[in-house]
Length: 218
Image 1: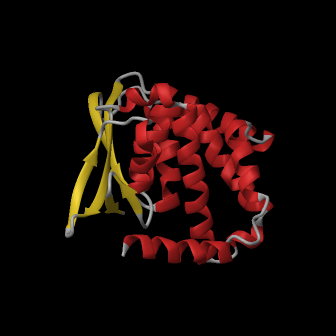
Image 2 (image 1 turned 45 degrees about the horizontal axis):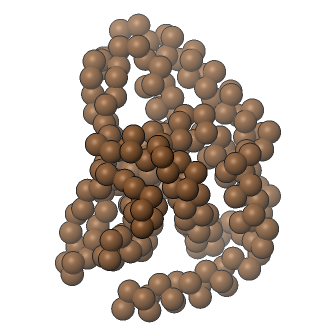
């Protein structure tokens, strides 16, 4: 069933992505070299974070904390901005992160790739959307395209940051729903490039379907 379902989704993807022949190449290039606009916006956001954090003299929450991030698709941009402030507040130290869907993906990116690279990649995706508006003109096509592009990013970051994956271990906890056969919660907090395990865990928490260590997950 899983293989047939994935094949059907793949056929749907061919139809939806016909207009993005250059989109994949552009996105892959942006992962390595973000466009100037994305870098400029990143600098502006991080400067703003410096200013906001400098104004926090008596935080209501301080000391050592663990952070749970809710899911919500691209609403993770709110967390992205908040995280840039959290990381600058002197009396606040975040030790571990947990979340599902986008709430697991974004902390994963921050810890693995670093703040500036992560923020720049998300601004770069906004630039990609503006370059290929027809591909993002409906909810269905936009959802498919972003899922497809996030899969490209997931594989790329596993290869690019393979040696750094260990720094996620015991720090970033992502939740997957796996069918064994009933829906079962599975927490992943150890990562490796071997067998593309890290890629599968990253996508498994945030996509509609992903095979993770032989199990159908979402």
